Image (cartoon, rainbow, N blue to C red; front, side, top):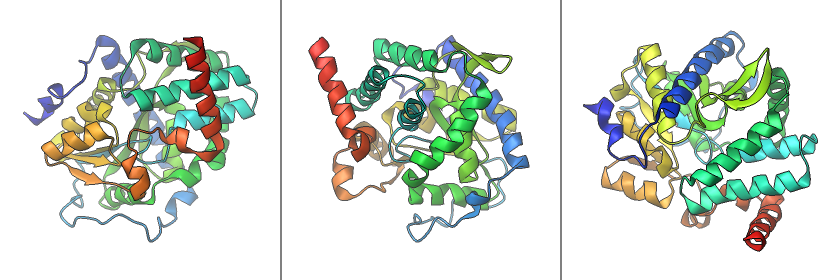
Length: 319
């Protein structure tokens, strides 16, 4: 059965916290999509330009309202890590100091360089991110997210991936971002791109103020698959007719859940997995960048490369 296919190629099984995170993200995504549809962003109507990806005439199928598309964000839709650039924006607004920024840069570099879900680093990253937003209002982060999109993210969108998303929209299908980034930030990005909505990590809030706790766990790995599964059930989608797009082997559970998986700018492990299973591949990087699939995009950004290198050096000195 196709719906159970994601269970085999996973790095770790879904836990109760993964399921909770996925269901919470799906609920938040459906709520935000209603708001997005009521107020579409004019900028989303802009053409993606001449760099649009080639489209296969048989897919997506126009008028198939039981199909949808799910797009990973980091290095799939945009170059680099959204959470890293969001951290840069918060640092600029004095949410935290240079020491915290250095720590944040190291954590992002670790995930991309190591390519493993190390529990200690995952916990450390989660705790530091939650401590930053604790006590702040959700509306404040949403407003700042709009500014950060314009400052750091707008010019990092891959035109080819955006064209793939627009092909689904033109076929009358819904398109969702699926990311470990906070759902509020993911929703801003989805709105600015004209997408249906976003599945992201849900941070607990009471009275519109962040408590410093998560609902479940970060939307990563198996939790992403659980979120897609929950949203598909709520939306009446047939996953065998849906598509999913990602650059990371950590998203194999999500990619294996749908009938049309795509590896976009894939890392080495995902490229190998995709070729073995005859999944479609797209690479929008230059030849030089494509060869360095193990290097974190965040570390390659000129404006922050020095800071990331310093973070790694600092970590080594502390060992």
